[in-house]
Image (tube, rainbow, N blue to C red; front, side, top):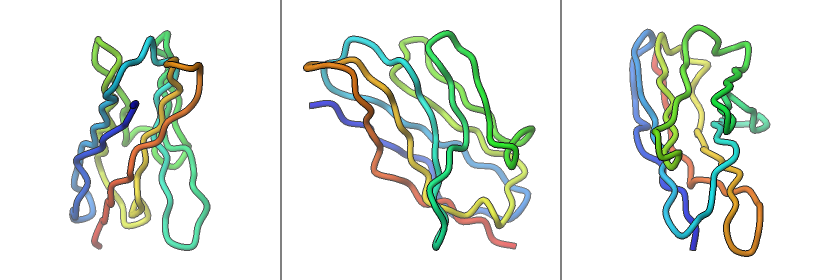
Amino acid sequence: QVQLVESGGGLVQAGGSLKLSCTVSGRIFSVNIMDWHRQAPGKQRELVARVTSDGSTNYADSVKGRFTISRDNAKTTVYLQMNSLKPEDTAVYYCRMLIVASPGLRDYWGQGTQVTVSS
């Protein structure tokens, strides 16, 4: 059974940093896309950052220059380094991966991790 497990959320003061991790477990063939989304209370879930299989990255305008997405060489773990955090970054953060596994290609989501930035 394929699962994504997240870690690294918490409470931080404005201007601080956090690093989120998300690791896939289970029998997989490949990971095509890895990204991070977030959902603040009363708001829709939004894409924060993405890294594709060729290493290309893109970011939401609101986090450019502050957040960095990366992955390990095995392409089983994705990270989100968050610097210069702002109160408006407070949300539940979810990782998502587009994975080739039995019986085919589909996306998988992590359980979510709370990030709270105090002013």
